[in-house]
Length: 101
Image (cartoon, rainbow, N blue to C red; front, side):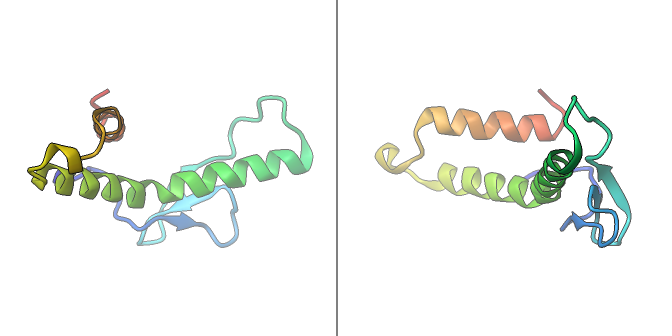
């Protein structure tokens, strides 16, 4: 399993700035509030909050995918392994997160 060069996880939402994501030391690592794309009012806030939630989950999602891939590689019986298309999707997502895609 590879080591990401990111701020330490887990990440979470800032208590007062709803569109800011913070790392385990309380430092802001991302903000999901910069692009409006013609969305207004309450819908904009909900979109920004949903984006913030997804960004905050990124380290956990990465570790989960990496763990699934690792244990899948330990399985000897091809019939019990993940479908190849799913494994390709996992590998592509992990590469994207590492900046390799």
